[in-house]
Image (cartoon, rainbow, N blue to C red; front, side, top):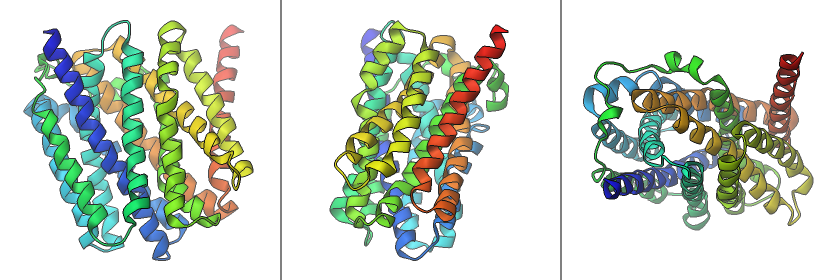
Length: 378
C-alpha cells in the first residue's frame, strides 16, 4: 500500500512537472511572437486571457468527466489534446490563437486539477505542506525551463513548438503507473466549482490572488524586458528568474505552514509579493533585479502552496476533486483579470505599469483582509 502510494505520488508529480515545462514555454513564446509581429500590448493581453477562460470553463466540466470516465483516462486524453494544440499554433495565424488558447486552457486545467488531486491525496500526513512545497518548487522549476529554452533555441521555426508537443506526450508515460483511487470517482456525487465555492472562500480568494500575478507575469514579463531595452533572449530570462524564485523558498514556507497558522503564512507571502513587485522598476538595470524577481516569485508561489495544503487537510474524495477543479476555475478568473490588467497597465502607464499595478492589487487585498479582521473584533 505504501509502495503504491509512493508510486502514485511520484508519477503524478512527474507528469504534471513535464506538463509545466510545456506550459511555461508557450506563454512567453506566443507573447514574444506577437510582440515581434507588432501586436499591441493590450491585444497580447486579450489573447493571453483566452487560456484562463478555458481554465475557467474546465471547473464546471472536470468533476463530471472524472465521475463518468475515470481520472486516468481523462487526464491522459487532456495531455494528448494539449500536444496537438501546441503544434497547431505553428500552422495557424494569430487570429486563430484566440480559439486555440481557450481549448489549450481547458486541456491544461483538466490535467492540473486531476493530477493535483492525486498529489494532494497521496501527500497526506504531518509533512503534507513540505511535500507539496517540494512539488511546487519542482513544478516552478519546470515552468522556468520553458523561457530558458527560448533563450537557447529562439522563437523562430517549428522547433520550440515541436519540443513543447513532445514533452506533453512524454507527460503521459508516468500517468499509466497511477492506480486510480476509488474515492476520486465517487459514483453518487460530483460537486461543481460553484457548489464547492462556499466551502472554502478564503482559499479560493488566495488562489485568485496568486493567479493575477502568475498570468500577468507569464504573459508580459518577457515583453516588459524587451520594452525596457533587453534583447528577447535576455528578456525571456527575466521570466525564468521569477519562476525559479518559486523553487527557492517553498520548503521553508512549507515548514512554516506545518508549524504555524496557515492563514498568517499566506498573509505574509502576500505582503512580501506586494513589496517586491513594487521594487522591480526601481531595481531594473542593476544586479538587484534578479534577487528581487526571485523573492517575488517565491512569495507569490507560497500563497498557492499553503492554500493547496489546507485544501488537502480539509477535503477528500469527490470533494477534493471538486476543490482542485475550483482552484483551477478561480485561477482562470484571476488569470483573466491578470492578463487584462497587464495589457491595460502597459498601454496606460508604460512598461513599469505592469509590476506597479500588481503591487497595488496585492496591497488592496492585504488592506481588505486587515479591515475584515478588525471588523470581526468590534
